[in-house]
Every structure is written in structure tokens, then in C-alpha cells.
Length: 239
Length: 247
Ligand SMILES: Nc1ncnc2c1ncn2[C@@H]1O[C@H](COP(=O)(O)OP(=O)(O)OP(=O)(O)O)[C@@H](O)[C@H]1O
Ligand SMILES: [Mg+2]
Image (cartoon, rainbow over all chains, first blue to last red; front, top):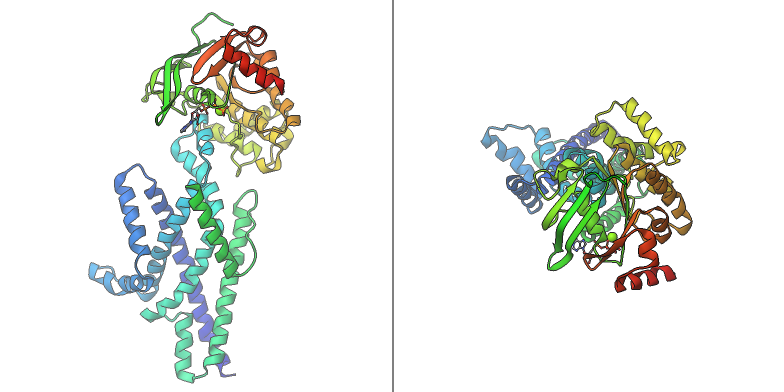
């Protein structure tokens, strides 16, 4: 099997994919939370800024955003290498989607929770941090995990800026060796492995971080996608 | 009952939601240590009065003094926070915190007590409602009656001067009502000022110092329970009592 000779390249690429995914996800969570809070803010400028971010990102192709981060930002004096540009573009992209998820999560927390806390004398920042956010995050956690897998798959687009991630590496090996089927088979298996490792990790975090323990539904990415849709519909109903 | 200044004073209070006037001029005094029970048909405005007295809602006009705070003054209304307790029909316990966590949250964040002191104090209050041994349970691991008692403990922990109850037993299975009303009764015996919206007529009879009957946004009749329940003057009161006492 000629593909065995390239396992080193492939595992290196897999590690890179994992690194980008985790970093971009952390960035996306921070941006998503900030934008969700911004969209509910008292201050019009914050609402406006967050709204523009979410709308612009959600209505342009992610590939274009990757090109902007890599080729256009240097014009503004921001020189990013392919790795940094990839993390930035994917994080900013998914952050805009997470903003809507978090916003639905925040509005899913019943008004009575805030009222009970307010009567006890908690300040509004404390109410957000200790009463609303923990419940909101719990409600949207399955949907958020799903976006983690979306980022993982999205890293394949970074081959467009010559980052040696998994899909790009597979293509390079193919053009050199012309053994398409074995290479793509291994690649598919590695993606499946990565997405399941991430989902399992997220499941453990969900059980530890949320009390009482939050148990994520088991199953494939596809079944989690379905759950995401159900949650989105519920979010609409709650508004 | 003392003859001091009333601790709650409402004068000419009105409130509308959209085009609907829900309160049409409420005048009401409550003395320190008094137990006031508010009864009336659904939609008569009982919850709205309670929410105005606890600062959750602002009156459109009129004056609202609670614990010397002018709630009709939006700049000062927040001063009431942390000084009154509210017990809701739906409990509104924080589901992500244990019984202990629910009770300590305000002690830590508002009273700024140390974790150790807050815990000790919270356990004492939970013990008072008979739930010290359930301190580690999450709300979803408690029965309805236990959840409502935790909610009462949470409110009591900040040492409020007044307790409001909005149909605190309406969401409970009938066999669980007693454990909550008995906690409420012992609070009343200890001299807590209480305003209680309830459909539990036996609680009203036994515990109230005064009963207020609300009808379509006004106080139609009020008096001591023996008078209001035995010799109601107002026709609407008679009709209402007939309906609720029948079942
Ligand atoms: N936030 C609100 N927005 C619009 N209408 C409201 C609001 N809160 C209360 N109302 C209306 O005001 C009226 C009085 O409501 P309130 O909750 O005070 O009645 P209640 O006497 O407590 O009734 P119940 O016994 O059903 O609890 C009702 O017609 C209700 O629909
Ligand atoms: Mg009500």
C-alpha cells in the first residue's frame, strides 16, 4: 500500500486541522457571545455594530472571507500567515452564526428567572453571569458543539490559501502518486476520527461543566444536525 | 397590629397594559406584621398589585410607598431590591444551582458574605423550612412542595421586611399544599409582614388579619376574614365566594 508511506504527512495535517479547529472555535465562542450581548445591548452603537458583523458574515461566502483575511488584510497593515488567517476567518465566520445561537439561548431563559434574581437584589451584570448565561449556554450547548464540527470540516477550504491541512495534503499526495481511492479513504477515516474525538470531548465537557449533568445525544454528525434544527425552531417559538 | 405608619401605602394606583386598564385606582395600607390576603377572580389584577408592590412593575399613576421607598419614583424604585421577598406560582428556582446554591447566591453577590458564612446561614434557613438535608439537591430532584419551600428559604435568607406570595400553592398537587402553607403560617406567627394572593380559602380564614377582595381592577371589599367570609356585603364578593367555596 503506497498510501502507508504518506501516513506521516497525513497525521501532521490532521494535527494542524485539530489545532486550527480548536483555536477558531474559541475565537468563535468569544465573538459569538460578544455579538449576542451586543445585539441585546441598551446602546444603539453596540446593537448596530453587532448587527452589521452578523449580517455581513452570514451573507457572504466563507471562501471569500478566507481570501480577505489572507490577501486583503495585509493592505491594512495586518500581515497574517496562512495559519493565522485561517483561524481568524473561520473563527469570525462561525462567531456570526454562534451569535444567533447564543441570542436564542438567552431569550430561552424564562423572564421569571431574571425577576427572581432582581428582587433578591442582584445587579444586572451578576444576573447575566450567574443566572442567565449558565442556563442559556446549557440550552444551546448541542447546537454549539455542532458548530465545532462545522469548523473542523471548514478547515478543508484553507487549502485555497495553500495551508497544508488534510484535504489539501490528500490532493497533493494524489497528484504525486495517482492512487486516489486509498488516499481519499484514509482521509475520510481521519476526518471521521477527528469529528468523533471532538464530539466525545464535548460530551465529557457537557457532563462536567453543566449541573445537573447535560447528556448530549449520541450519534452521528447527521443526527446532531437534526437536533440543531429542532433547537432553532424552538428558539423561534420562544421569541 | 401596630398603629405606626403603614409599611405599605398605595394611593390611587392605576396600571394599563396597552389599551386595557388593569388597575383602576387602588388604595391600600398594610401595617407592619400584618398578614393581608388578596382574593379575587382571574384577571382582576391581584398579581399586578403584587408586582407593583415588589418593584417588578411600575404604576402609571398614584403613589406607592413600600418600606419607606417611593416606588412611583423611577430613580429610587431600585432601593426596594433585596428588602422584600417574592414567592412565585412557578417557583422560579435557578435550575442550574442546588437548593443551597439558590439560597446562597444573593448572600454572596448582594450581601457579600464569605462562602463559609453564607453556607452556614443558608443551611439555617433551609432547616427552617425543613429542607436542610436536601441542600445538595437540584430543583429537578425535588418535589413541587420542596421546591416551593426552597424558594421561600431563598427569599427569607436576605432577611426581607415584607414577603409577597403570588399563588404560591397553585402549581402544587393537592397533597403538597399543606407543607407550604404550614411554612407560611409559621412565618405569619413569627410576625412577618405578608401579602398573600391565594385561592386557599382555609389559609385565608385561619391566617389572615385582613382579606381584600379585588374585582376588575378595584378593591371591591375588605375586612377581617370572619366578616368577609361570613357576612360579605358586596354582591360580587358573595358570587365569588359562592363559586370558590362550592368546589
Ligand atoms: N405584562 C402584561 N402584558 C399585558 N397584559 C397583562 C400583563 N400582565 C397582566 N396582564 C393582564 O392584566 C390583567 C390582570 O392580570 P393579573 O395577572 O394581575 O390578574 P390576576 O388577578 O393575578 O389573575 P390570575 O388569578 O389569573 O393570576 C389580565 O387581563 C392580564 O391578561
Ligand atoms: Mg395572578
